[in-house]
Amino acid sequence: MAQQEMHHWWQTGIIYEVYVRSFQDSNGDGIGDIQGIIQRLDYLQWLGVTAIWVTPVFPSPMKDLGYDISDYTGIHPLFGSMSDFDELLRQVHNRGMKLIIDFVPNHTSDQHPWFIESCSSKENPKRDWYYWYDAKPGGNPPNNWLSVLGGSAWEWDKRTGQYYYHAFLKEQPDLNLWNPEVQQEIKKVMQFWLDKGVDGLRIDVMWHLAKDEKLRDNPINPGYKPEMPDCDQLLQIYSCDQPEVHDVVHFLREVIDDYKDKVMLGEIYLPIHRIVPYYGSDNKGAHLPGNFQLLFLPWQAQQIGIAIDQYEAALPDQAWPNWVIGNHDRSRLIERIGDAQSKVAALLLLTLRGTPIMYYGDEIGMRNVPIPKEEWQDPQGLLMPDKNLSRDPQRTPMQWNVSAHAGFTTGKPWLRLDENFLENNVELQKHDPNSLLCFYKRLIQLRQEEPSLQTGDYYPVITDNNTLAYIRRRKDEKAFLIVLNLTGEPKIFKPKNNHLQGKVIFSTINKNEHAVFKAHETLEANEALVVLLDA
View (tube, one colour):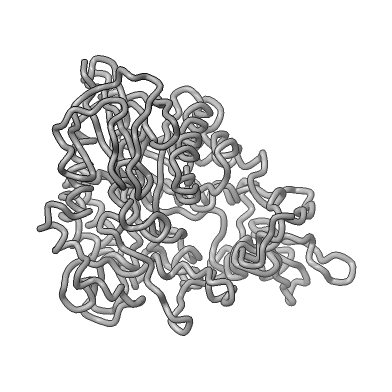
């Protein structure tokens, strides 16, 4: 037990993303809020998750649904009040859980007082708090950088005769985090929330926090296809993931480290070899730089197995892995892998080494919900309407029960619900022992009870690539073999080590539990197992 106590809560626990607008509405306005989260804490505790990450609840004009912040230390009335937030924090902690908040240091709203001052004149003391540059000859923008949400990343300001940079919406100007005054203000904001008692910060778009000072043009992307986002016309080599970004991340980590046992997550959409440096030298970067491989990889045993091994091999000593299979920016898990594989995916997420990060609704198999264009809310969809890139379908209200609007609200939901909520909701699945939700609950309980599954080492099992297999083992503890069939056809487990054998203790199909499992056994379609290996 002494060894387990050396691990931090964010290493042994399970993080659950609450997309606040869609989790639970408490006042009938159709938008989820802080009191709504409080009403559903008992459910999250019942499920077994140990930490909650909430999307932004700060004051905002809502051009980007809260990621355009106009006051870093307030609460938007849409979501409640600061006293509501304080109550949420108390209630979370009273249940032995942790609370992580979204933090967006890369950019503010154009309605933030800092930017209003910055754009008032070239001489304003806050001018250098943002990226302001002169036009090229002929009036063109300083370079060819494109906004992630479409169009040029430069916006002309007539009043002062310069361009400002925005990696996202023109209403989201990027902060100049190299400015010492900006750093001090960001530090104050972080201290405000950490002093209040939040247990960690999830840093939005971490890989964007530094830009090329020479403003060099990004090269053309030879692999661009018309259905891709506009920004993918260029390879974003100079506009993000610059070497200097790690100094910024280190600065953020120093603030975090002034407090006891807090965590910093990083949103980073990069390949593994570029994610690993975000752990920082001597692990003084992000505790959990976002590992989003499972959001993009083909659902195929060999490719996923290689990706796991590459990640494990690349991690610095003492660095801790993390895994994500769903979030508010990517299509729902069921849409990517199919309903039949939902339990297999859960077993993969919750038995890999590292911190699992869940997305609300995945535990009941929520699907993408088709949203008519006239009801779109997401700026990515609205700005590129012909590319079907709206993220609204994966952000629809949580399906709680069979009552009106699935128990999410007594008003009109901000996004329409899935028509299947009468057949698929939390309440129904809680009472069905064979449901996906009960499967998640049992699997979470197993993970949290077994030290080897929580913090044990990872050992790949070499097979003929028909199945994905690995062992989780911690010294002086039980060892577990995990075998997954990522297909809809029966597959034979053919490991190079023919001596692997044990008892099935957990399965996606009940009939195999408690049976002996060994090499050359057949896994049924969509079957995955946890096997307690013989001593």
